Length: 370
Ligand SMILES: C[S@@+](CC[C@H](N)C(=O)[O-])C[C@H]1O[C@@H](n2cnc3c(N)ncnc32)[C@H](O)[C@@H]1O
Ligand code: SF4
Image 1 (spheres, helix red, strand yellow):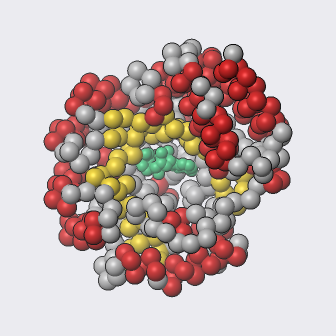
Image 2 (cartoon, rainbow, N blue to C red):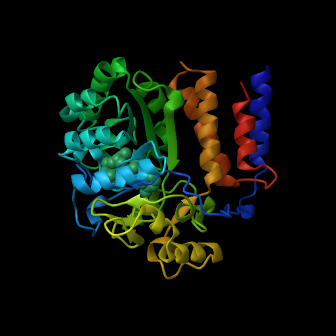
Image 3 (spheres, helix red, strand yellow):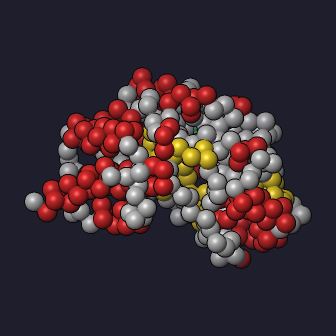
């Protein structure tokens, strides 16, 4: 009864939302809140439609040990304990993963893995050997059927994914690994969310399944514009949070302020001759921040072409999914899909949020619907 009451309030309020009120959050100060990412390679074994790493003009490569030691030591001295290692590329496509993990262990740093998972078998022994410093894997999976998965994760084979995730379940989970997933939603796959939960919950705790919506960062934005679920709730990403929050160290030492800088357009420094702190406080990055504060980013092509779905919708969708899988952990695919369809319908027909329902309030309300 209590659950029903909360669900009714949730949908009622959602229906009242007004897209025209969207105001992105403006960071008031620069805090290196999210640890910098260290790109260990920018090569990939596949070429997903929404990502399209093949179009990147930056030189492909793998980070050298001395550079990796330098940057990890510096981050360690800054108090960082764990770093992501991907930008545009797949960490398991890195042939030097054992050596890289050895460096991480030497420095005493945790390595966080996000991967398409298709090359997991190749690295199984390495992952087991280094589970003291890498014990979590996020699988990026954008479909629940062979057809959809192979369409979006172009070059990836559905059977290979199932084989590798089964291996992760049998070999890694019992030895202390945890597994999560990320599904990037669009018109091409939103109809498979229910199936996704039903199929993959045998491998991944559904509370660890996250759902994202596409952004326009790929060099070819035609796919984004064709299948974006919520064009009416898609906004220029400015001010972007990233220049105020973190840094991405590329495999050659250049430092970018964007998580997916395909051509090296937002390089704000270089750790071969500057410290991370100096890059963070440097004038190149400050100029970019100022452009974002003013909302005038025409001098930055990547920023000027960056569009995102209203982040409150993303948060709301994830909160809803968490609510549903907690409420009905063993529900049939149709149970979740019905809610997803309703959510999509409401957002598409009206729009997001009344200003008074801030994102944290919404999330809090939904999460308390237990
Ligand atoms: C760029 S990938 C790199 C790491 C790894 N190759 C992987 O697939 O997880 C990191 C994440 O970004 C997501 N991604 C790729 N293109 C995206 C886009 N246009 N919008 C939103 N997320 C995207 C992927 O699905 C993945 O979960
Ligand atoms: S999303 Fe990951 S797996 Fe897909 S092309 Fe981009 S880097 Fe490669």
